[in-house]
Amino acid sequence: MVDTPLREPTFWILTALAGPPLHGYGIIGEVAALSEGRLSMRPGTLYGALDRLVDAGLIKVDREEVVDGRLRRYYRLSGTGNATLAAETERLRRNVEAATNRLGELTPTARPIAPRAVGGLA
Image 1 (cartoon, rainbow, N blue to C red):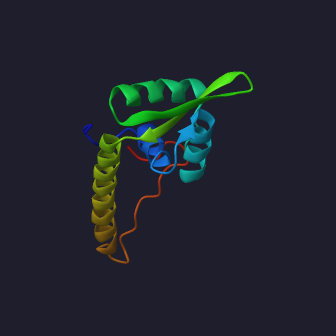
Image 2 (image 1 turned 60 degrees about the vertical axis):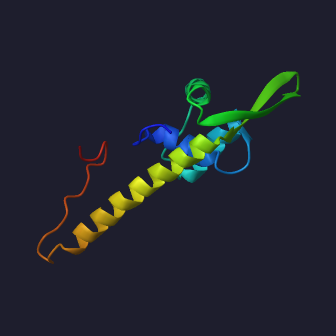
């Protein structure tokens, strides 16, 4: 299992592959849909990430097929990838729970600082 926290693109790729096997452009579309458009991956970035995730044992090649004379490779989550995604999901759930509890403690006079339009707060 890979140490968490995962980088956001890795999290979304693994999440996309928690469903049925997908090829590269399918992963790009699924990541965009799951992240509600917050993450838009370019093919070059995705394929480099897929190679790293295969090397790390988080995903596996499910099958390959030729479509219109081009090789299409489908990927799926490995057992290690599934465990890594589950651990990261639990870590994020605990973070959300802690923040939600803390926000519930705010008095009516205490107001949270709104994030900036670009980049948010560090």
